[in-house]
Length: 396
Ligand code: CMP
Figure (cartoon, rainbow, N blue to C red):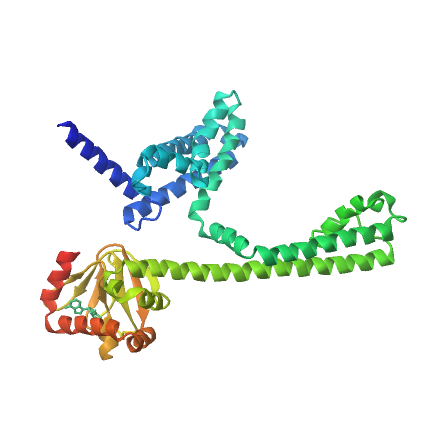
């Protein structure tokens, strides 16, 4: 085997591993790799939590060392395939790797892999070094959409949140001064200075209420009632702002995700950004696994499907044409109003986009070119069932 062939084999292997470990790839294999990574993280975090329990002392290698070895391996693999995944053509591989290492994600992976070995090398006892495993919990952040949404919401809603925080601080300071004035004679040990009465004000305003310090004068108790109510209002405002921002951000992300899927369907390539935006608002994403019946012959048709990635088989009396990426099905029942003409079954894990009948009709009125293309395809299928199927098969 000459050098060139060896190089090309090496590049092919690296590209394949890059695809497998791509954090956004939709293939079944890369999803499996992500699930295994998640499992490893949960395993590691549980290991750190249970590792110093006397009952699990003998299991330490299994609880901590195995996930640690996994994280080191994952880190090295990620570093290796990074130039293929990020694909900065103008940048050298080393620069791409350095950029990634300086990113929050790279840093978490780096520390997750090397903090414990470094602590052990520095002479820390194993049970103390293992505590660095707590860093593994940050790896979960990449799989939690909720965390990144929360961070984004805090950024977007920073102004109203800061406004409520300001109101909280003003109430806190005023209440602390008032409590000091009203209670200092009766309870000098707890309210003797403004700083001392701050402790009572904070526990009351946050509605924690330890009860270690309580006002004893009538005026002091009236103040306590006001502080408690202000606390509830402040936290209700915070929760309201966050909840509204959260739901807006989730809707925005769902729209962007659908947009991304729609843009991958070749059928929509010709129609332009405006139509894609209109369609993306109406499509729902759904994933089905191999063998799922997506459409059953004879059922009433209330939606049609676009295949983003995957494949389905249409079960007709004389043939079983296959449809692949970028094609659609389920349109005939919507056009004719008749029951479903065939059963359609997914041949592998398939990412679909669903268009409901009401939206189909609405889009047909607004974008006749879209509707015409769908009608023409339905016509072809009605007249020439097998030929069309063979063509789709070849494409898939
Ligand atoms: P519908 O009748 O709503 O439900 C079954 C679907 O199978 C149908 O819409 C078409 O989308 C699809 N279908 C029917 N016949 C063919 C064919 N010959 N080739 C490809 N797809 C077909």
